[in-house]
Length: 342
Image (cartoon, rainbow, N blue to C red; front, side, top):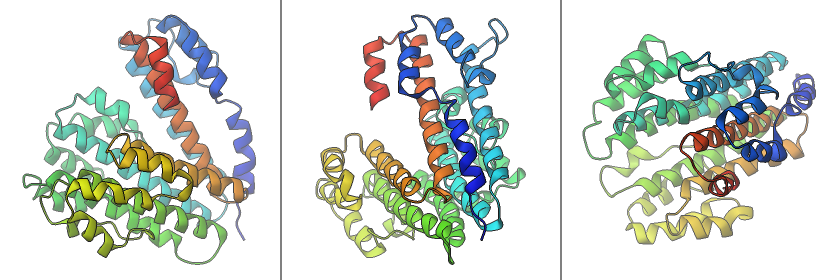
């Protein structure tokens, strides 16, 4: 049976190139942007940082370099996986991340955010590289972004085009996001069917992620539109009837019910945040992170290990970008420490 032994063994060497908590503290302790970039040049992130004076917009160049480095790393890990099933499971999970990036792009376009701002939040993947992301983020409208998706042959394009017709109606932007999610979840659920440890890992994680996605949707609902159009199938804790029941409640009655949708280990934290609509997205994201790490710890020969690795790599890159942008905006180190620990 194909396993992930070879790929997982090589991840130990890749993890040694993380900055880690102490490295992030050292980065934060540097007083200037150039000093922080010098530290990164001497680290495993060196290939992402251009030499001084090469780029007109140095921070944008670093962010592009980090994205390119991360995408290259994903491709290397995918190449190390042996067998059809682990590869399919791995790419099905990445499709969910690709859907998140697309949702970020459309959210940014709806708010008229500049392309660089959107790109700082959206992360590339094997199916959605940096240049394609830039083309989408710089589109003058959501319709043009969908057209560019279709021209690139994206599997998300047909669903996005169908949802585009109702974009101007109440709840249209949320329906567009859910349409993208449904494509990714259908692919992931298909890859999880069958026997074997990797498929079981994917099945559990996809079910949790679907529950958290639906919980996030309930947080955004404003009472307009048909809630039935906004449900993503596949979860275990939040089935369609309960979703519709909660969607029909006033917000003040809906929020206190949401903490029960996350795993017990994070429920108290969720009750504090979700019940008051404060930090809700962050809590839902942390619930998923914990679940992925738990699967990797309990099943060290499974595909959960590279999934956990990529999750941790993205988290560290987000913190690096935060420190660098914080320098640009003159944020005090104490404020950045608080944000890094969030």
